[in-house]
Length: 321
Image 1 (cartoon, rainbow, N blue to C red):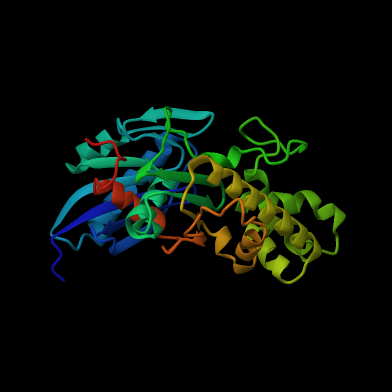
Image 2: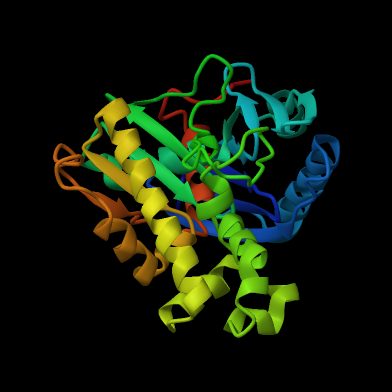
């Protein structure tokens, strides 16, 4: 294999760091996963640097030359200055990560929010090849979106655009969210939200299959139980699908996309995906001409590919050093 150039992609998530080597065509030449530590940003960066050392020394690179590094990060990122601003609200410790990695490697470095990176992967190698106007909605442990309008992703004046998980969809809800509001969709329809909904209502459904293993309960288990006609699970999934459909219909009124792309592990469930589609009103989404679809990209690798995309300097994202 004679590959001239590649980019180092780093996807730092809540539970793992994925480091890999990616070509400009989006091919992953190699990758390795490491446990992450997001207790705070300082610790997370320490673990990231150690993981990069391990990858460099023990895995190595296939291409003759690495032309840059792209890093996708949880939280808020100043891509213009290459600064990781905060890992989550209340855990703010601005770190010049692009500069740190540049000094360490001598390579140009670009930073981006993790959902921004996934959106950029879709733009470069997924549905974005067919349209310059789309929304990427990530429904995983949490819930966030990337908005691409006329080929450019919107990040906002404080690099906080797309946090639509904090859209209130139940004004009468007593379910508190970490953002300070009640009734946010992330508390009801994300992987974590689905799990929390099950735990909140289990006392009223003692015969539910979910009651057998509460300590290890996950959103994925609730999705599977709904497919098996478990009453509690069915009600939770029906409501989550309805609220996600409502969110999608609200979002398309904002940016007028041609396509809405669903990413993240939760929407990979066929039963759930079909329920979302069933709740969409044709008149509301009549201009979404390329449909409400699922990502073409592998869910476990989309963040890595997206990080590499910003490292390639192919979009308008990334703080360079």
